[in-house]
Image (cartoon, rainbow, N blue to C red; front, side, top):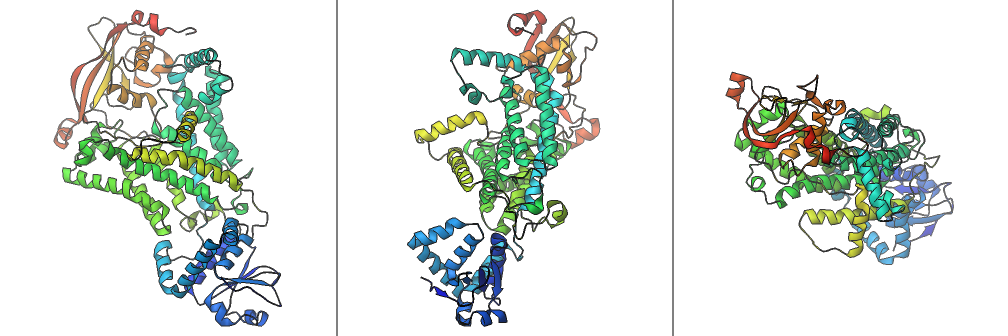
Length: 635
């Protein structure tokens, strides 16, 4: 155990004395200064004032270990001095408490400290490799500033996108009206005698209003909350509001809100509530650093997103992933490809196989670097960013890739974001106002809850463990309606062909005119374009419908019914209505197989696609065929 002594002339504030000639010591003192703020002073023992004020302590002792001298004259050294100084700064007090109360921890800490002190040169080199050459503390205030601005923009895009499509999707005259769903839910709640529990089982603001006006106001409130968050107004409050609003729409918006980026936004938005500064008006210069557990939870979310995405591909047993042939069809069969995706499809098979190997290396290997040192985290962030940029250039995945890029930001630090110094502000040095923080019991409880649920999901995706304790299963079931604690993984099974539905109308049953969608493939001459981060939810849903049957997608039959009525809000979701004057008498859906053209064909004909008729997806129907089943009360 370290020797404890006293000095006759104690300093007015806690003073940590270190070896100024030791590069390893200097690097760690910079970090400790950041942690203790202005609560602890730091001086090298080579300073003449140290020998003059503390003659009781030999210079050789100062050279062996750091010493903490308190205002009452008490002196501690080694690991004890480190833990005690951190507690004086108001951070990491649990480590000092553990040191005092758990003797094995204290003895182990002192042993490790002595070993490091004897081999400072080696550990200094190791530290430089692990954390980089800089001495500036990484911090996190500028990183948080950038993260919250990005999240505000994504929320803004999501709500603006929803506002442009909401009436046609879930409005009172939309494809799947929210009012119909809420009527059925209220009847079920009454039959099952549900009280307040109904708000947990079906969390939506539509309990208090499900008409078009209420939906518009909720969407407008989402836009306003996004702008307020962008301006730095009450960040935790705005984030909680945005999370509740988006959860409300996801609850009532089925099947148009069942996408992975929707639940990813909900989880990110929920975690951001505890990551954001507790201020009414965001002022970076007066902020405490983000809670370490909040940063860790965002990194854990990114780890799960990437690692699980790789796992599901291999665990699905799809031979195209194992044979390195998935990318030979991916660019062609993905929901909304881009023109760059067309060019990527033309690459040689060997290049596509190599790209798939890199994909697995990033999704399965790079996530381990998230929890390593600074340099490794930056490598992981660069790898993830490269993957997401490649995906968003070749396909339209709405705001999914932008959100994944945003989750890479907490892997960075303020040293990387020096160019945002003016925007992100400076970290407080003296911490004079004691910025408000989330209480550590809240953060610890939240972390324990999320890790318990999501760790089980990670193991399940990896195929490890099939039986779980009943309380954990019950907890997962209770949290499921909140859609904020999720597992991830796109394209577990690669589709080998591209079926496309073409909806046609007719007035005589012989001559048929096609409806054209805004973004999904239709006209073979139309260039695949960019639409992300906007999400055309109907176009996306049509891709999934083509993989099944009309009978298995009741919303599709509702779409046909609305087209037979020339419903304006639904027609607004389409690019071309071939019957502008009056609705058609009949409607049908044909199934085609679409394939990319090759380079010679593209040059000769200008076609981006070639297609082949495969059959009838939905037979010709007239309006009277729908009325008995499709006309709900109040329509």
